[in-house]
Length: 173
Image 1 (cartoon, rainbow, N blue to C red):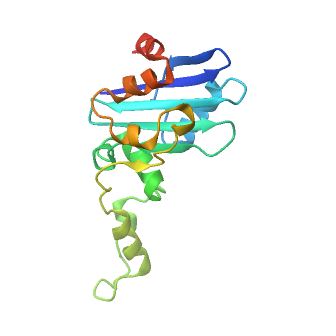
Image 2: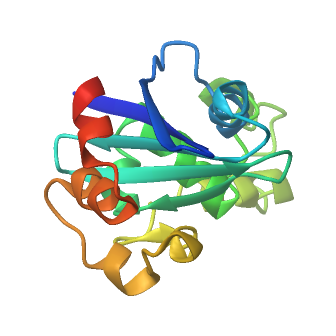
C-alpha cells in the first residue's frame, strides 16, 4: 500500500495535498504534478512511501530538473512507483521493449552476442541495496544527508517534523 503526498512551499509555510498516482508512469509525471501544485515556482516535495519498506522524495524547484532520493533502491525496485524512480536514477531506459523484441530471431543465436543483447542484460541487473539518489536534496531545508540516511519506520513524519509541518502531513494521511 502506497501513501503519497505533496508539500508545496509558500510564503506562509508548507501546504500539503494528497497525491493521486494513478496516471503517473514516469519521473516527468511526478514533476508535472509538483509544478501544478507549485506556488510561484517555489519548492514542491512529492513524498511517497510503501508500508515502511521504502520511501522516496522527488523535489521540484520551478523548471529545474527534479531531484530524487530513494531510501532503499532494492526494495523500491520491487514496486511500480519505486521502480520508476530507481530506473531513472540508475539510467535504465524503459522504452517499451518487451521480451520478444529483445530476442535474437535472425538465426544467429550461436554467434557472439550482439551489442543490443549485452545492453539488455546490463539493464536487467538488480538495483543496488540501500539508498540511491541525491541525499542532499533537503539540506537547504535543514534536513541533511546524515539525517536522511538514518531514517527508518515512519520517515515522512520525521521529515515533516524537521520542516516544521507535521500536522499538515497528518491532515492528508
